[in-house]
Structure formats: structure tokens, C-alpha cells
Amino acid sequence: MATIHDVAKLANVSVTTVSRVLNNRGYISEATRTKVYKTMEELNYQPNEIARSLLRKQSNVIGLIIPSVAHPFFSELANHVENYAYELGFKMLLCNSQLDKVKEKDYIEMLKRNRVDGIIMGSHTLQVEEYKNLSSPIVTIDRQISGEIPYISSDNYTGGRLAAELLVNKGCKKIAHICGNLELQLLANERTLAFQSMMTAHGIEHLIIQTDMNVFDQVQYEQIIHRLFQEHPDLDGVFATSDIIAAYAVKECAAAGKRIPEDIKIIGYDDINAARWMTPEITTIKQPIAEIGKMAVDLIVKQMNEEPFEAQNILPISLVERATT
Image (tube, rainbow, N blue to C red):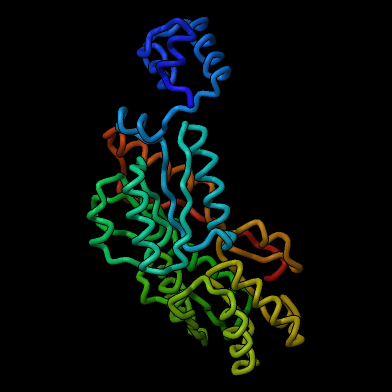
């Protein structure tokens, strides 16, 4: 296996020059740069990335921990994080926690051992202390850990209010809100608080149905909605905390013979791509997924460079009305 010394000897330059080319540091003429790269190609030289990262104290790798890349929201988020990080010269290391505390902690330890430059946390099953003890820059999505650790969230309260207002204005008299487990203490719980407030203010009969602790387990969605429609046949409105849950509600309406939007109106949340693929297309609250991904990377970079940053980052949402309302 060729070494950096072999490259320097064949290219007739110093080892320092080869190192500068590899790390893009200092002035190097284009002719020298081209000669070094050509020599590396001839020798099939592969730089030792671990050694290089130890030398410059930067790995150019960012870790992203999410519940599951199979969930459309997180797959779209991961796509935006990876694309933007790559533009800035970083690679992304993706970890699926499956909301398993042991697995999430194991991934955090693995990322620390690999000296990643920062960790973006989209999965939150561990206690706050576990995050505070991390030495790497960290950004959390949809959970506030402390006043020092930056977090990103969409305006969940306004999203919940807009969804509730639309169903009320459309004439719904009995509305169900299907949400994640509120014990998880995520900022998404603000959607539920806004919904409750609007229902109380308008005197609308309503129900709040929570998932179990594994909020992304789609098997339970069908069971929850099937039972809901059986126990409340007069239900005429559903506000789901994700487009996936809303899609299962659409499916169950077809099985129950309920017309959308004549008999029942449905609103989702996120505006994932699949919301437009459904028939009928799903009315939803749009989260700025691309902006969330970009901001997460920017906040990691700002911490690396010891630049000032905002700890609280609340991004605006918007109502996208389609055929389910």
C-alpha cells in the first residue's frame, strides 16, 4: 500500500507539500497540485482519514440520529441534511435509533469515538443529562434540552391552531386529534395544546387519542383509527399529528364507507411528498423540512467555529389546503 512518502518521492515534492494538497492549506501552485493528484492516482494512494482528522482536529463528518429513515419525514430531513452538509465539505453518518434508549446511547458513543464534528439529534429517548455530557457540538430537533444547546422546531402551536380553526370553520361538530405520546415531552406537543385551546374556545366536542411510546410504529395507526371510527361513528373531523396518520385515516374512511370531505374532513401535519400522492390529496400543515435540515448543519458549523448562534430557532409553518377538507 502506497504511503504519503511514496507520493512525495515520485512527484518530486516534499511530504509537507503533499499534506498541504490533501488538506487544502497554504499556497500551492495549480501545476504542483495537479502533479500530486496525478501521482496519487498512479500509486492508488488512499489517505488515512482517521489520521488526518486527528492531525487537523476535524473529521468533516456530522452524525445524524433519527428514529427511522423509513419514516417519510425523517427520510426527507436526512436527504436535506446530507445534501447541504456535502455542499459545505462534510459527510453525514446516519443512525436509526428505532426509539430504543440502548441503541441511541450506543450510537452516541460510536459517534464520539469516531470524532464527528457534531451531532444532530432527531431522536430523543435519553435523559437530558446524556446530551449535556456530550463534548461535540450538538443540535436538537423538536426538543429543548437546555438554554445552551441550540434546538430547531417549527411553530407547532400555530400549526395546531390553524388545523383546528380550519376544521371548525368547515363546520365540524365532533373532532378527533390523533397525536404522539405526550409523555415524550417533545415540542410537537404544542400542536395538541393549541388544538385543545381552540376546541374549548369554540365549544366543540373533541377527543384526543395518543399513540403508545413508539410513536412511529405505523401498525398501531390502523388499529387506533379503526377503533376510533367504530366507537365514534358521528365523528366528522380528524386532525392527525402527521401525514402518515392522516393517510391511514383516509384509508379507514374508504373501508367504513365515509366520504371525504362530505362526511369527514382530515388534516395532517408535515407536508411530506406523499401527502400529494394520496387520493384524495391531504390537507396539511407544512413544516419547512429543507430549512430545518440546512439550519441544523449551520448551527453545527457555527459551534465548531465558535461563532455566535441562536439557541432557540422556531421556523414558520403554513396551511396547505387540499382535497381532504
